[in-house]
Length: 229
Image 1 (cartoon, rainbow, N blue to C red):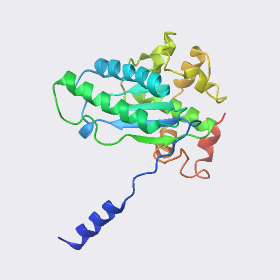
Image 2 (cartoon, one colour):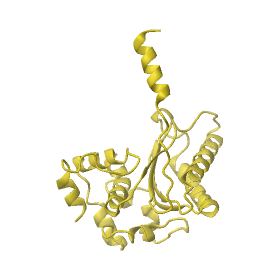
Image 3 (tube, rainbow, N blue to C red):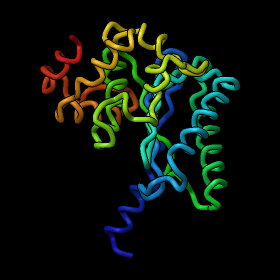
Image 4 (cartoon, rainbow, N blue to C red):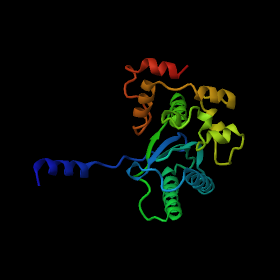
């Protein structure tokens, strides 16, 4: 075995797992992608129905508070709070049961997701707004819809139709900051004010951290200033 390969394997083995930050106060952005980035094995309406059923279950069993959920053809974005500081229990259950039910419906035994879910703790009200808008704009960035409210596999549909399930805590979340509009008409106008490419990249990089934080506040000051107005 070559020296380079030995060193690479040693480095890989030595990498510690990211320590989980448990919080009853700060919400999390949670992201998961399907195995090999393939489309889910069953239609998105089926994945959506299973996912929302499981959100109801984790709300009942673990007191999870969902703020946003957007389901894409091969991944998902979640914004969620955990009053009992049990994000690990919630997501272990949700991902396990979602995988089992998708495989059952598809008649498969393969893994559904390519790895563990990724999370980021969001500890600032402006950052809350950044993540909220970034998540809801995913379908428009992928050219799956021209407006936020026309994408069907998004919790924005519940808000738009004023049919809000017990597990969805949008109003509670929006009250935490002064940026996200409360009224649905104003909220849609704000959400459809699309982020620039540079702004998207700043948020994307911030969401890769344990705690949401811009990579270089001085460098991105103009972007920060726009988000905070």
